[in-house]
Image 1 (cartoon, one colour):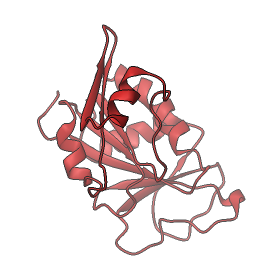
Image 2 (cartoon, rainbow, N blue to C red):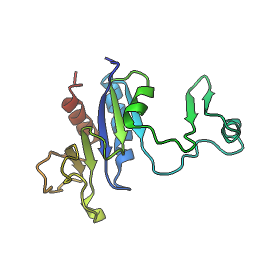
Image 3 (cartoon, rainbow, N blue to C red):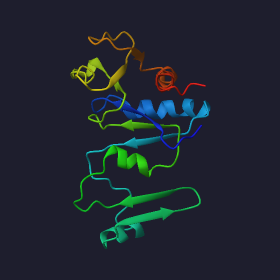
Image 4 (cartoon, rainbow, N blue to C red):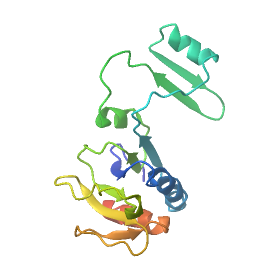
Length: 173
């Protein structure tokens, strides 16, 4: 079912809300449905992908624009921005191989449908109440009441959340 233009769906939430844990728990269910899924995670931190003494890090420090590390098991490309602007989400999507779905963690300001992982016990305001935010649902602990008129999915049931996303995007088989 891979297509040249994958469906894109965002998972957003405050730091420590469980975004990564939810995505990690949904991926096996999606794979079991025959879906090929990629993930783009946005970080505000400098990425340290290999120890400084490794060959690939040495090549980058020496001035390489990109370094590819390849093995029989996986490959990775590290692209140094060196002061250039961060690529847009669309530019990053274009670099991925063909898949059915790309889950995006972060990129809160992109115009994509998204779900918020929300934990009221953390005492922070929800993100989904912002106008024009693209939120189509919230995943929260059982018993959470939302002020917004959005579906509230059980955070402790990742397959339900995954099915909602697939149904929303028309990927259910």
